[in-house]
Length: 302
Image (cartoon, rainbow, N blue to C red; front, side, top):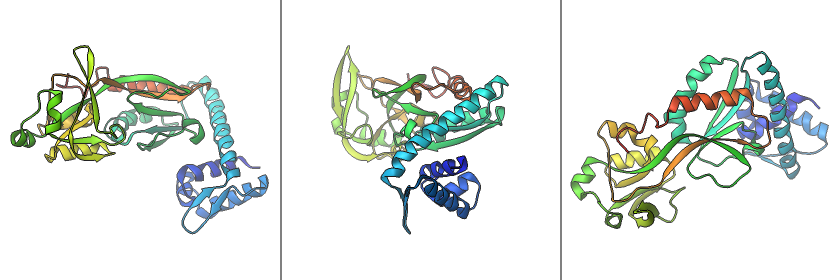
């Protein structure tokens, strides 16, 4: 059984197709197909169901992939440990992050890090899906908000907060709420992954109060929320790191109530019970320094 066959199999699963895996590995599709067939012959089982439309893992393939992803991660860690002795950061580094944060802040922070460490090969997955770090072979993920109980280890990178924002045009046409109880008279733009039941919790006078909008729009993308607010569709409840530039440019303004949304944070999370490679530690330190705390996007939102 060849190591390149195992790496190819894992690449197919992660990329979602033979064509995408071939692009990732820099080889022809025929080479990827041949390696997969060789691997299936070696293990004596069909690992993937092939059809004209898509590939899917068989039950044996799912089990085999979990072990292969873990094994390759440990192998890459061993290589990383040896490289650390020479003080050179190198090798693959797989990171997952939410789309909006990745585009606006993570990407620009990563570029100087990669220039400083040309031996690192970054695989950056920008997706709002909650990835399985261990099962899918990620070294690290960026998570925002309250972390669920899990076996992951987390390091806080920077503070963040949801804010209420509206366009000047909306404010002129409809006025702005001053109290949580006023929200029901206004159109709201909500992030569907966080507010599925339209309820918002605020801190006021040492306790909690609940408010709700007359919802104009729910969407699972922060950039779309920001643009909808700029267009005057309503008041958006949105992370400060998405709207800071629109606030500075005057396209949006903060809606200040008699209560505050709770503060949150951006975290780097890693699999537990695993040696943390030097390249991951270095990246986390670099990101924390790049964002600052309070971060550069806070501006006049305090």
